[in-house]
Image (cartoon, rainbow, N blue to C red; front, top):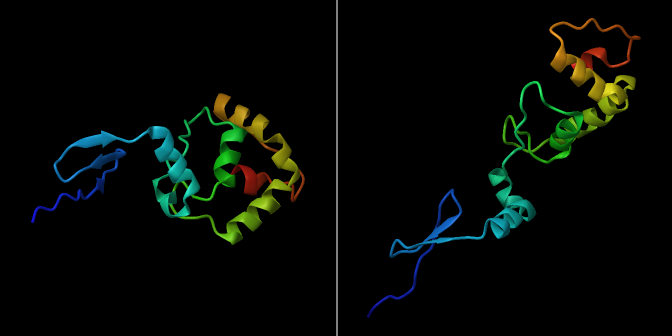
Length: 124
């Protein structure tokens, strides 16, 4: 008896490898959709790359609002999300873009603000 069934193996590049070593390229779009929509594939999501000296507040917020910590590859905890909400309610958060611009364009910054305004939790 001849076994004509083909066993499939997936590799990291998005190819399907058949038992007879032929490779078929899977549509990148369908693979990306599967990774984004399936929570079991969350570990395959590619984090947005941040470039030192060019990071924007929008990029940082997108990462913070995501499910996966780009530094550890693990899910953000509920405690993290609670702390994040408190950080975003601090007065200094409204000026995040301005601070990032100052940090990117200056070697040293002297920051003065009211107690409890978020100087340490937002910028250090």
